[in-house]
Amino acid sequence: MADLPIHIIVFEILTRLPAKDVGRSKSVCKQWYALLSTQDFVRIHCSRSLVSSNQRVLLIGDLTCSVRPIISNNNDYGPSSIVTFPFHHQNNDVSILSHLNGLLCVCLNHTYELLLWNPTTTAFKCLSTPDSHGFYINNLDAIGLYVDADDDYKVLHIKRRSGVLGVYVYSREVDSWRNIPFITRQEYLSPHFNWSAGTFCGGTLYFTVCECWIGGTNVVICFDVNSEQFKEISFPPVPSIGMVQGVLVNVKNVLHMFASTGMFEMTIDLWTLQGDYWIKVLSCPPIPPISLSLWCDITHYVTNGNWFVMTKLGKLFTIEMDMKPFECFYPVSWFRGFKGAVFVQTIVSPSI
Image 1 (cartoon, rainbow, N blue to C red):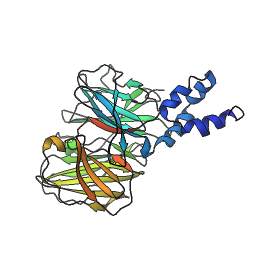
Image 2: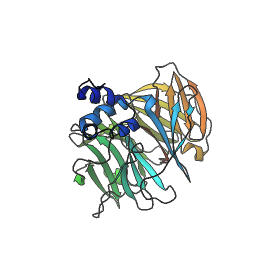
Image 3: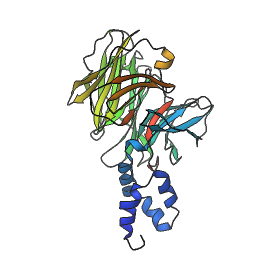
Image 4: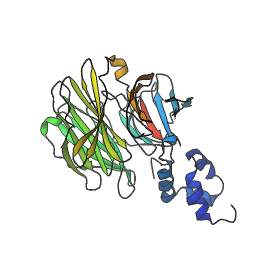
């Protein structure tokens, strides 16, 4: 290896190492530390880390926070590793709002502060400022984490306060917040509408906006991260019998939605977005009644043609489907259960 050019060692070999091994490699010498800290290296390493085998499940319990691998052979979690929060908190009162490329956007519920955190490197950045930016209120606000064409990681914060909507963007590059215009229907400002977290896919952040009663209005709000323009598209044509909930997932850079309808029996369909229209991919049989305490933490795991509806407590249902394997784990929740996330292990930093 000593005879190889340094750029071959760094960009062809070291970019393929696990994130924790990259951290150890930085201590080899000053030259390696400098090269392994460049944005080019981080970007290439991140792109090579976005594989299903590198995914981890982070679960926040009442007393501990743990990270577990996903064992694809038996569709279960592997042995857990305890994670210590690097920031001050009270009794694990931490909510996970969004995740992208190894970064988590979290809220400290006792102070309402927003943070960016990489649980692999333990680095974090507080986004709250003295002028009241970066404070999150559950059931009123919505968060989306994305990266723009200039490779700048940003946080979109939609705030509803007493019928007034404000939209703010935090830039990691300049370490500051700014306001952007958002023209939408006045009724979406009402607390009767539930805004999902943003799902980043193909240069756009997508939010579901669902009215919290039977037969209510359901739409999808789209935010182009480069033009910073918003638009509204329709919801999949699901029957409005009982409650309607749509959960967005990015499947290989194509937007999908798990759309659930019903009350005592739930029907769940998987849809994909083509242009501005939804195409149904699959349907599952009606699911028997599930207690609300379990339904709050439901996740979906699709692999090898089988679709598993799970909670963090274990597998609930197995549905066999004749489809290509996704080989990915997709977290979704009902009424936004914030105590878990799936992330990839990267060296992406929450600050520059």
